Image (cartoon, rainbow, N blue to C red; front, side, top):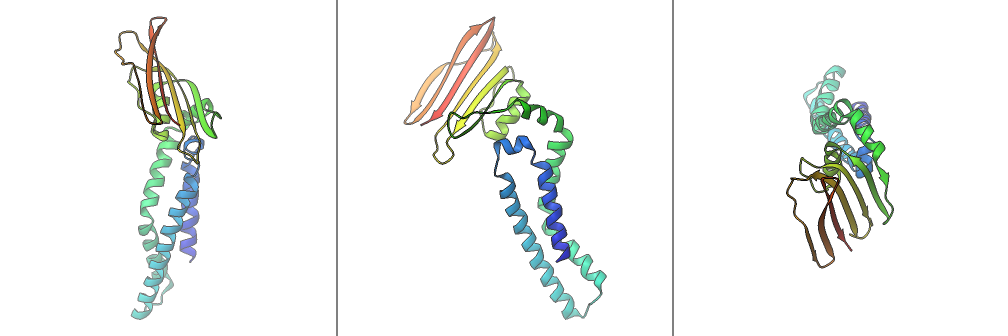
Amino acid sequence: MIVSLANLALLIILLALWTDDLELYFHPFVRPFEFLKILTFSILSLVAVQFYSVYLRKKGITTFRTKIKGAVFLTVLISSYLYITFTQQIFSNVIINGPFRKQLTRKIRPSTGLANGTKAANLTLKEYQTIASLAGFPMLTPAAHNIQYEYEFDGFLPDYSLSLIYDLPSETPVATYDSSKGDYLCSQSVRIIDNVKRVTYSEALH
C-alpha cells in the first residue's frame, strides 16, 4: 500500500509539472483526464502487488526486503507508460520550451463571442504552430508571419468559429475561395497591403 501511495503521489506531481498554463488554455480538462489514468494504473499495480504477496506466502517467503523490491518493480513496470509520457512532456514543456511557452501564454487572451474561446495577435510562425498543434487549427505556409487568430466555441453545442489573419510575401501564391456546406462555412480572401499579401481565413459551424 505504501508503494502504491508513493507511486500515486509521484505521478500526480509529474502531471502538475507538465500541464503548464498553455496546455490548460487549450485542454482545460487534461488534469482530470490524466488523473483518471493515474488512478487506473495505480489500481492495476495495487492488484498486481496483492497477487505477488499471495505468491510469496505460498512459497513461504516472508522477508520484508523481498516484498518491497517486488512491489516497487511491479508498480514501476505497470506505471512505466505514464512515467515515460509525463517525463517526455516535462522535458518538452518545461526544460526545453518553458520560457517560450510562458511568453506565448502571455499573448493569449479570452475571446467571449460564444461561451468559450481564445485569441492572440502578432504571433510568429512558431508561436502559431504551437497553438495550432494544441487546438487543432489549420497549419500555415512557412512564409506566414504577423499572425493573429480568434477562436470561439459553444462547449455544449458544436457551434464554433475560427478567424485567421496573416501576412505573406507578395510573390507567394495563395488561393481565394468562399464555400459552404450546410451549416459549415469556409472562406479565404487576400488583399495587398504595403507590398504584402494579407490573408483572411474564416471557418465556422452554426
